[in-house]
Length: 139
Image (cartoon, rainbow, N blue to C red; front, side, top):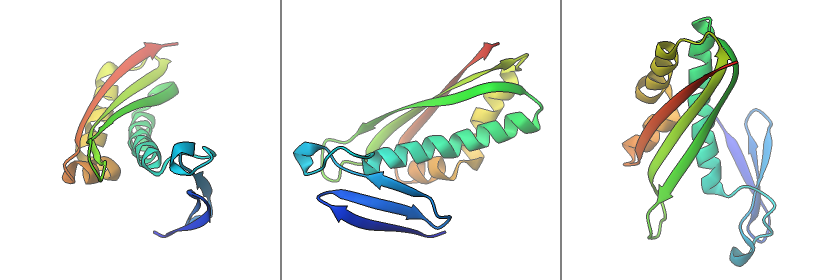
């Protein structure tokens, strides 16, 4: 896997993935930015949510669950020091569908957290406390 990050100006950077996708990262005006993109630490949080959601949806689809919507809300706390690393992250999955089995959603979230989500497991190994919850809604 490869990526390139190129400075644009101020504290704005253009990140490009090895697969050819680009994203703008920028800082707040009080840090010299123009607020034109996500902060780099927000990108880590978004990446974690994407990684975990990929796992959960893959497992639910393999389990023939009729999911019509899936989102994950992430909240994070950072230490009050430099570097301001994450200390805690909570992922709350909201899964909507027809005749969804609560037990399958629960198991998918657990397996993502314990076995499959590379981002989550990597952050936990670095000392971040990661917790998960979920809710199921019927359509």
